[in-house]
Image (cartoon, rainbow, N blue to C red; front, top):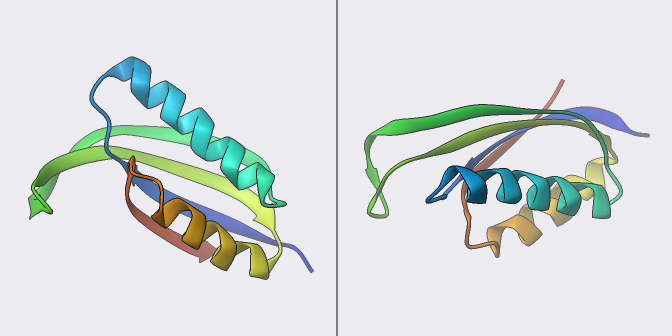
Length: 93
């Protein structure tokens, strides 16, 4: 049974052009794992309270999608290998 999910993904990006490309690439990977994207919100670049892994900030992107619960674990493992993804968090809505 499919559920609605929200994924907050923090991207490491250098320029605005690369941000737009990364957002689309991550969205495609979400759809390739059987999810149906409902909405993508680019929340912009924000600084962290303290540097993490020598990075002082990142681009926050919120993805809303519908997927099977098993797709979340698969998606986490795929995006962990992606160099441009700094952090990812999922929750059912």
